[in-house]
Length: 491
Image (cartoon, rainbow, N blue to C red; front, side, top):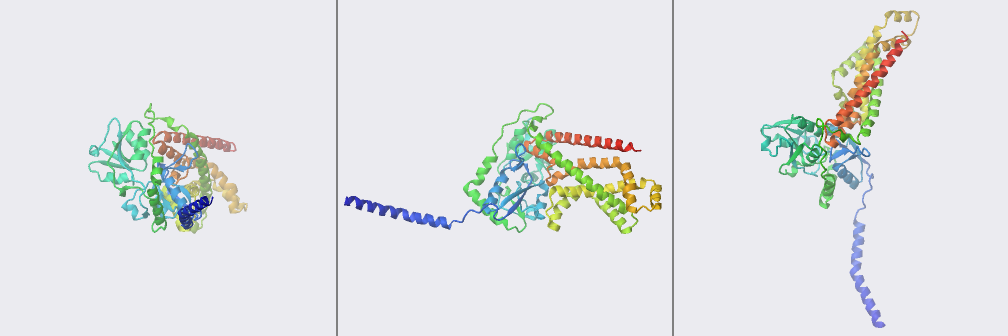
């Protein structure tokens, strides 16, 4: 009995000697490790992206409409690791640098390559992915090597790594376009002989267009990869680089890349004029949701333009020189500069000059309303001048106040006269509303672009969007004719 007690005592001492240091060390290391940051502790961080470049970023139009992709997963991981809540702001790729410089976004992640020109305006993180260049050509006229491209028309996406690479090739006719769907259309139409694109995008192009083939080029250097862009002097660069290196070391980047770069099955062969409207299956409700945004934007812009245009027309006929000069100068400026330029200035300059983060829809409504007012002011002024002067003289002789005369007698008759011109202005606003897609407003055109980019098909979504616009214009014109006939009954 005593012997067993001693053996048990020795066993306990040995086990304690072996396990206690480990427990102490583990306890000390646990107490030394910093607690994981809570998402949102440091506030919200805004990421700018152009969600039309799958698999890096695109709108999940078939499901919830959220922006998804490889870049989004990496950005979410980094933001959570640093304790930020990530907010994503969608816009056209051409506006991303401007959004950084004007403070609309904190960083940009949109498969953006590092170039010397961009380095002069923004700071970049370390690269997180290096794409491999490929040649995409028609299967009937395959071009598989760089030597085969000599004397051919070659397309690239403007500002991409492949664009810089193509500029170094001799003997080719280079065409630069903004979007991948535009390159596909030019390739299918025969204006381009080949397109130089990165591997992930090229595989998607060939999967959606069975008449295209992909030929891989030798891998490039790590300096040609994609990186995250920040405003000059941003304090976020160091912390983002630290998390990126951690993700590369623990395989997180590779896991995300594998998730998004899985090859898809090739689509069925197109049967008529190389069109395949079956790609729109599931996207029609998504595109029809843009009708509400387009109509809302058009009606708000038309109402604002009519009210402000009426005020400007009254300024012009007021006889008060400063008001006349102001209205004339306003009309000259807004009619003398492109509408797209006015839209960009209001959207990007407002946060920089005033600190107010104007929403894309409000910026678009202001730009179109202000522009429309310049044109309508001349139309309304013409309508007022067309009213018989005798009515004005009679009202003045009866002692009717000026503003009462204008709003009760003159303007109702003027509006009746210019009604066809007002309808034309509304139709023009409805069609020109497609411009707002460049600042990320999800109207009909923007949604068509999303479907184009997701399915790598150029024409089908555009033709359906054109049908929607045509039906809307027909409805608007019919309503205007009904209103015009109703007003004529009182003649």
